Structure formats: C-alpha cells, structure tokens
Length: 199
Ligand SMILES: *[C@@H]1O[C@H](CO)[C@@H](O)[C@H](O)[C@H]1NC(C)=O
Ligand SMILES: *[C@@H]1O[C@H](CO)[C@@H](O)[C@H](O)[C@H]1NC(C)=O
Ligand SMILES: *[C@@H]1O[C@H](CO)[C@@H](O)[C@H](O)[C@H]1NC(C)=O
Ligand SMILES: *[C@@H]1O[C@H](CO)[C@@H](O)[C@H](O)[C@H]1NC(C)=O
Image (cartoon, rainbow, N blue to C red; front, side):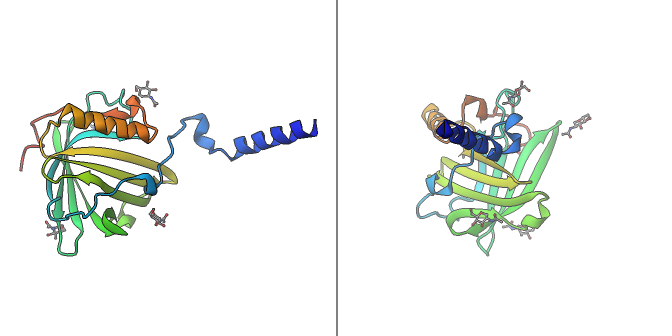
C-alpha cells in the first residue's frame, strides 16, 4: 500500500515537472549537439555562395500549413574575420524580401552562432552547424535556437541547384526522423524562378 502511494507520488511529481505548455503542444525535444554530425575539415571559402533551400524540417514546422511553401535561397559571403554575411531571399506577398544576418564562428570549424545576437529580439541562444557538405552540390545544416525560453531546432537541405536527387531527399527525411520529427514536420519547398534567381 505504502509503496503504491509512493509510486503515485512520483508519477504526480513527474507530471508537475512537465513543462506547462505540454497541454497545448508537445514540442519534440532539441537533440544534444553531441548527436549532431559536424563536417570534418570544414572549408569556409568553398562553402560560400548561393544555396537553394531544398528541404526544411523542424519541431516548429507544420508541413500541412506550409504545403505550398516556396523555395528560398541563402547566400553566404565570407568576411575577413571568418564570419559570414548570410542573406536569405524569399518571395513574400509578391515582393522579394531579403533577410540579412551574420554567422560568427563558435567552438569549432563549421559551427556558428548569430552575430549581434542582442539585436534579434527574444533570441537567447543560436547555434548553426554544417553537418555535411561536398560544397558543390549539397549541404545539410542544423540550427538550434532558444527564443523566449522555447527551444527550437531545424535542419535544412541545401542544394547548389533547385533539384537534388531523390536519394538525397530521402536521406534528409530519414535523418529528420532519426531526430524525432515526422513527415508532418518535413517540407520540400516548391521550386520557383521569381526573386530567388535575381542577382
Ligand atoms: C498544422 O496546420 C494545420 C492547418 O493549419 C492544423 O489543422 C494542424 O492542427 C496543425 N498541426 C500542428 C501539429 O500544429
Ligand atoms: C558584410 O556586411 C557588412 C555590413 O553590411 C559589409 O560592410 C561587408 O562588406 C559585408 N561583407 C561581404 C563579404 O560582403
Ligand atoms: C500581405 O499583404 C496583405 C494585403 O496587402 C497584408 O494584409 C498582409 O499583412 C501582408 N503580409 C505580410 C506577411 O506582409
Ligand atoms: C548557448 O549554447 C552554447 C552551445 O550549446 C552554450 O555553450 C552556451 O552556454 C549557451 N548560452 C546560453 C546563454 O544559454
């Protein structure tokens, strides 16, 4: 009997310690960086230039809502101090938007954090990791962000061209699922020509 009560107590304690937002959404936990690959011998110069975002998956991504999500690009320009100016270009409301930020090397080659993080309201922590790339065809990226005490993570599949092989996309989806994501969290944006092909 006493033992039964103890067990119940532990269960309740566990329930109380669960985050309050569990009743609304149950976020998929951010994987530890230790379990995320890092491109060996990262070549910062070769990674520069324009990448098409061919796939995105993340714990705050709703594939149903974003079913017709349009492809965008992210361009990396290396500065002398080894940071990148990172520009994402996307069409929104028929206008071509550019979003510029800086990625600053952090910890080890191929890993970055946001430059001037104070100017990004609500962002408490931000980590980017180049998981793997061959520089001239594809890259797989990991992003982790703490925003207003919520933890988000995202992986992106970059291509130097708008199309990548089915094998590569499958690999990306399988990797996303190994991090606890489901098909509902994975988007392959629709290729477009407008805006993202402009110089
Ligand atoms: C995703 O979006 C759809 C359509 O807006 C909505 O019905 C669904 O509940 C959302 N799923 C999640 C997990 O938020
Ligand atoms: C990066 O952005 C800064 C600020 O706009 C600019 O001064 C610098 O020239 C840019 N670097 C490159 C490599 O384009
Ligand atoms: C898109 O345009 C509509 C109508 O002009 C406007 O109400 C809406 O706020 C705009 N959305 C964005 C994200 O700019
Ligand atoms: C941000 O994340 C990095 C890497 O995970 C960690 O070393 C650092 O302590 C974190 N900073 C804050 C303010 O949480």
